[in-house]
Picture (spheres, rainbow, N blue to C red):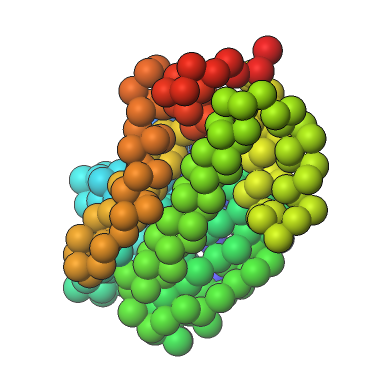
Length: 295
C-alpha cells in the first residue's frame, strides 16, 4: 500500500497523516475545514476538496473523524466509499460504539471493500510522536494488508480480533477505565480540599503510594492548575463515556461507576466548561462542595 486517502485532519488526524508522509506514503487528505486540508500541503501531502476525491485511487482510506455519524457521512453521503477502488481498505480509527462499527463494516464489505476497526489511544501527544496504541479488529489477511499503514501511525499495534466491533469494544473498555480514574482522582482531591489538606503534598504522597495510577500522575498536577493546557477536553469524555454506557446497554452489562463518572463530566460541560481540559471535572466537585479551585 502506497497511496492513502485520509479524512479528518484535526488535532490528531493532521499529525497522523504527517507521520504517514514521513514514512513514504502518498497522502491525499480531506477535512470539512478547507484550511486544514490545505495545511496538509505544507507537510508534503495533497489536499482534497471532497471526501470522494481523497478516496479516489487510494489503496486505503483512513477515517479519523469525530464519531460514527461523520464516518457514515463521509463514506456514503460524501461518496468516499464509491470512489475507493474495489478491494480497497477502509480504516476507521475514531472512537465509535461497537454496534455502529459493525453496521458500518457490513455496508463497506457489501460494497466490495475491506474494513479495519482500528481505534487508537495515546491522544495528541501519541499522534504527534507516532506512538499511538492501535487496537485493530479485522480478518487476519485484511489486518496484515493494512499493517504497514497502521505501523506508520503507532508503535503499539494489536490485532484484537477478526470481527469489526471488537476493536471498538477494547477502546470502550479503555475509555471506561480512563474516565473513571480521572473522576475518582478529582473526588479524592475534593475530600482533601474540603478539610484543608495541601493538595500539592497530597499528590506527592499518593503518587508514590499503592493508590497511584497513570491518570493520577498525569491529570493530578493539572487539577491543581486554574487553566491547564487542554490535551483532552471534558466533552471528549462526555462522548466517550456515553459510548461506554451504550455498549453496556447493548451487552446488558451493568456499569454503575461509568454512569456516575459520565454524570460528573456532563455536569462540568453543562456549566459551559466542556472545552476545558478533562482534568477540570474537579470543578464540579468544587461547585458541589463549596471549595475553591486553584488560582
